[in-house]
Amino acid sequence: MIHSILYSSIKKQRSAWCLRLILIGIIGLYCPTATQARDEVDLIKNLADAKQDVEANPASLEAHLNLGFAYMELGSMHRAEVAFETVIRLDPYAPSGHYWLGGVYFLQAKYEKSIDVFKRSLEKLPDWSAAHHALGMSYFERHNHEAAEIAFSKALALMQKSDSPRYEVPRSSFRSRGYGWSIKLSPANTFYFLGLIASHRGRLDRAVTFWRQAIEVGPPLAEVYFELGVAHNKAGKWKDSVHALREAIRLRPEMPAAHYQLARAYLKQGRTSEGNTELEEFKRLKTSYDQLNAQHTMIRQAPDAAITLFRLARRFMRQRKYVEASREFQKALWHDPNLVEAHSGLGHAYFGLGRLDDALKAQQKAIELQPDMAEAHVAKGLILLQRAEKSEAKADYERAISAFRKGIELNSKLEIPILVRASLGRIYLQEGKLKEASHQFEEILKVDPNSGDAHYYLGTLHVRRRNYEKAEESYGHAIKLDPTSAKAYERLAHLYGSRGIRRNTAVRLAQKAVELQPDSAACFNTLSWLHYLNKDFEKAEAAVKKALALQPNNQLYSEGLTVIQQARLAEDDGK
Image (cartoon, rainbow, N blue to C red; front, side):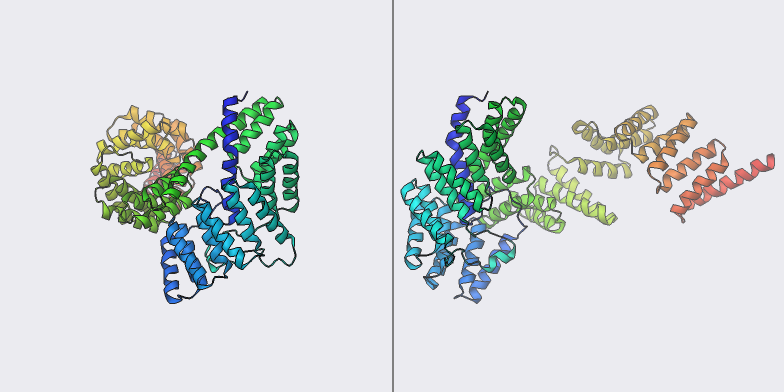
């Protein structure tokens, strides 16, 4: 059973949660809590471009609008207000200036100011449906339901008139730069709010009628289906509730309250397993939402707080939402260009997006500001390693390793990514620094005991130290953990051959290696050598020829072929 205390808590929070999403979504302003994918954008460059446009065209409404949008994206609401006020000053009848100024006030919960702006705009443009709707939302947030209903009803009447002159707010060129803010209103939005007002007044049947009208006219809104689901729950119509809430979740999967209400409906029907599943999903989403909402509240209260934006970006990074993270890091850096952690964080976000050049620049900037920042050096090494894997250039590998070593030197207790330790271990192995190499692979196994690669390289280290039993054990672990590891089969086969033991097993292992990696000349060469040791010169010759076909200029393979052919001739002469 769902505890009554939990239900009471959710009941109080439900409306506020849903309204915050739809209010901002409908007014057309960017809401960072929304989960829709958004394009990668260089916010600081956009601001510079917008400023340049204003300088070149000081009388252009569009230029000042774009400047306001750029400031909004950076979280600087005060500067956005100035830009939109300039639009109004340049043209008091321009609907866009009033609309966005009111929107900025609305986002900051300055509802009295947003009401004043929309009222003033309606004195000039009385048939502007978007302004009536926005005015209704502002009144609604102030709990003035009577005034909100009047404004929404007026907006709906204007929208439904074919000759309504203000159905859609004019779009600026800002939209073409990839932001895609939706600012078109629909009667469905207004029916939704009229339903909420009726519900608050205890007229649930009338509310349901409004929400059904919203669904009929479209487009589909998750919040409408959610409210219908709640209404059906109140009426005990559990099947209808499940249908409506499933649709709400399909449209907006991250809505915690919808999962909670669906859990209630399932449990009331005795569908315990499904109900508990939805309840767990609700708890997971609610925890995430509460934390995110708290951070957005802090941003609204102190929009220039770089550290708050930085923390929000870090949260997106933990969720692997790299586009959103990069935006918040950029905002933080605009407010505080010397915030070292934000430069490094932006580098991590760019790395997640595959923008290696930008990632490297960001980490390098962090290092310039704080040369002893170990994390930035390691991150820089990771980027350089990624480059090296593509270029296979020795210089790139050396630069990567140098950055890794610097980071570890600065902080030996730093948590090093497995990828970094593996690279360091391989380099130390090549340099003959067996102790250092062994340490890296052993550290990997502490974090990931099932790392086949770490076991493989420890096997190689044991061979170098002539600990053959341990080498055999490590190679065996590598094969068990990764049965597709051709190199592990090949090395174990080579180990048996070099010790003169288990030669038939060695041949089978080598054959498995070439099956797994038929483009490996080394695997064919080992198979050839093992056949040679078993005096099966015909198969040895065939295998080494395949190695040569893959690497025609390999002197070692050519010499091996000569030795095999000579042995074969000698054997024939003996016969």
